[in-house]
Image 1 (cartoon, rainbow, N blue to C red):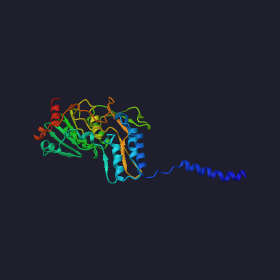
Image 2 (cartoon, rainbow, N blue to C red):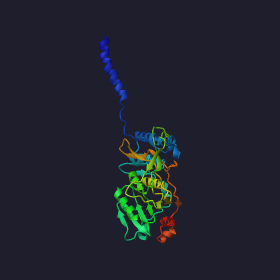
Image 3 (cartoon, rainbow, N blue to C red):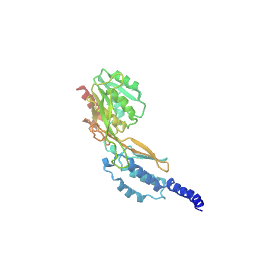
Image 4 (cartoon, rainbow, N blue to C red):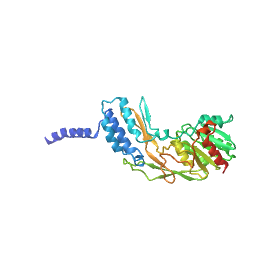
Length: 334
């Protein structure tokens, strides 16, 4: 009898254990989507402490507003409103009908860039496009404009530009209104301006679910590479719309003694974003790392320039780019 009992009871026990161990996937409901997004951000987002954001308090404020009778639009708007509090251009929510983001960090700042003015007053008929770069010699000073780091940048293009400008007094490198792109492109360029191996930044990575669970700062170095380096005076132009990879570019370039940053503070964006997906198929992204300057200044909210300049409306009306003119004058005086 005992043997028969065990034969019948053991399979039942294993079946019960399997039911306990194998959890069913949560249902695709507004409540479950809210919970998933809040919890993922809670465990993985990088800037809660730095930005003094009380994520728990926001949960208690927004969770009662969620119910399973909500429409897709109502849920999208509510989740977007919640993510807005992170004040991070690397945080987005995307559905099949809309995409949200928070760009308030630059909306109230001077634009400090006018490509039409640049084209009409500074880029003469002999300006060149080399890869994604626009280049022009201006009064024996090289001018480079790069509008995005999203396009492919080749070492050959950089070598051509450096060769063209090598005997000039200096270079103005303009990344105003550059919204970023691939960080690998940054290093390809920066190495052509490095005088020697230098510390350009530190990175911190999440190590656990706690808001302050990070690695110690890990140093990032840049060394010279390429056929030749440009070591004469360089002015890097930035504004509040110089974001993400452009922010990295300004940070890395500013580590070199011959580089001066001119214009307005960058827009920031010092966290590497990752993508995640909700139960309903919507995707969202958020920052999961921190980037620090060599002195461990957090660059998430922007990098101040060495020379602060805003474009004057009176100058714009006269066809003058105040920031570019300041940079050209700075190089002439070196």
